[in-house]
Length: 123
Figure 1 (spheres, rainbow, N blue to C red):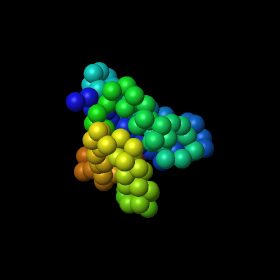
Figure 2: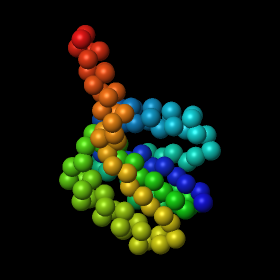
Figure 3: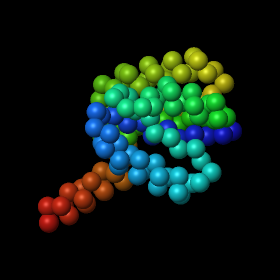
């Protein structure tokens, strides 16, 4: 089964906002060259999650892991994203979808942010 990883970020009006997300995408692609890794946005930027998922399905993906690149769970991740995934499941019944928690809630990320904060503060 071909798997695609979709890094799902909020989006912003400033195109430079997405640069850190693109760096994460590039790093994952470098580490796993055989895996499809795409970047999608909730608003303000393209592609949307729907467009991105339709694209990877057209390329043959049959399992799609959506990884929210959010600091924490909020209204979008609690309501909007599950609704989007349900819509995609109905449109593509032969595709397996999974949604992870917000990346910022992962302990590795929490520890990395704490380390960076202490370093920036000179402590």
